[in-house]
Image 1: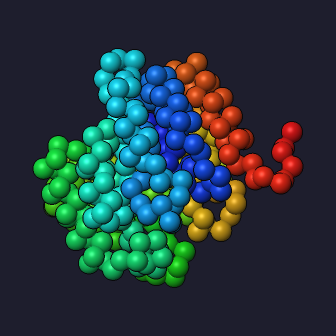
Image 2: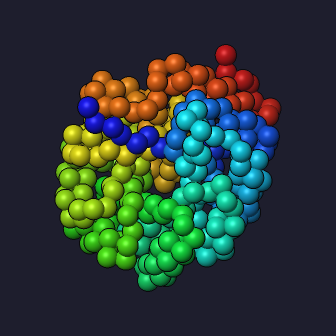
Amino acid sequence: METVTIVECPRDAWQGLEQIIPTSEKVEYFTRLINLGFKHIDAVSFVSPKHVPQMADSEEVMRQLSRVKLPSGEPPDMIGIVVNEQGVDRALATPVVTTLGYPYSISAYFRRANANMSRAESRELVESLQRRTKAAGRDLVIYISMAFGNPYEEPWGPEIVEETLVWLKDIGVKLVSLADTVGSASPQEVAAVYRAAADSVAGVEVGVHLHSRPELAAEKVLAAYEAGCRRFDGALTGLGGCPFAGDHLVGNIPTESVVAALSARGAITGIDTKSLAIAYAITSELRAKYTYVPGSTRPN
C-alpha cells in the first residue's frame, strides 16, 4: 500500500470569491481542518491586497493559528504563496508559514499576465527563493504553470517541462508541483507528461495540481497516480480554479474525489472517511455563505 500526500488548497479556492471571508471565520475553518488531520494546507498568499483583497489578512490569520496542532501534536505544514521579493519578506516574517510556494510559468504570455515578469526575472526570483528559504529553514515548492499544455499558441512540449525541472534540480529545489493550469490535459496526457518529467529529475519530489471538469477529475488523478505521482493538490467541493480556463465547469479537483479515487486503489491518504465528511460539510457551508452575492436569490 502506497502512502500519498494530500494538499488542501483553500487559498486557491477563496481568491476568486467576490465576498471577503472574515479573519475569524478563516481561523476557525483552518483550525477545524487541522484538528481533523489535514496535514498540508495551501492557506494564504502574500500579494498586494489591491489585487487579491481576500488575502489581505494573511499575516493575522497565520498569527492566530500559531498554537493549533494536528491530532498527533505536530504542527501542520502551512503553505504561503509569493510572487515577488516583497511577498517573500512577508512570508519569512510569518513563523507559522512552513513552506513558501511560487508559481513559475513556462508560458511567456501567462507569466506577463499573471506576474508581469520576463523569464529571466522569474528565474532570478526562484533562485533567490531557494537561497532564502534554505537559510531560513523553510521548505519551498515551485509550481510549474502550464505544465500540461499551453492554449496561447506558444511553443510547448514535454521537453520544456523537463528542461525546467532539470534547472530547478540544479539550483537545489526539492519539491515541484506540475499544474494543469487551464484544465486542458486529458488523463492520457497527464500520465505521459508526468512520467517523462519525473523520470528526468530523480531525487526531486514531483506532485500535481490539476484542474478539471467534474467528469474527468478522478480519471486524471488516477492517471497521475499510475504514472508514479504521490502528491496531490485538491480543494474541498472543487471550489476555485483558473479564470483563464475559458470553461466555467473547469475548477480545482475536489479533495473528496482525490481521496475516494486513491483510496479505491489502496493508497493511504491519511484522511479518514468521517473526517473527510465533516470537512466537506463545513466547506460547503462556507462556500454557500460567501459565494452568495447580496441582491441575488439564494439557491435552495
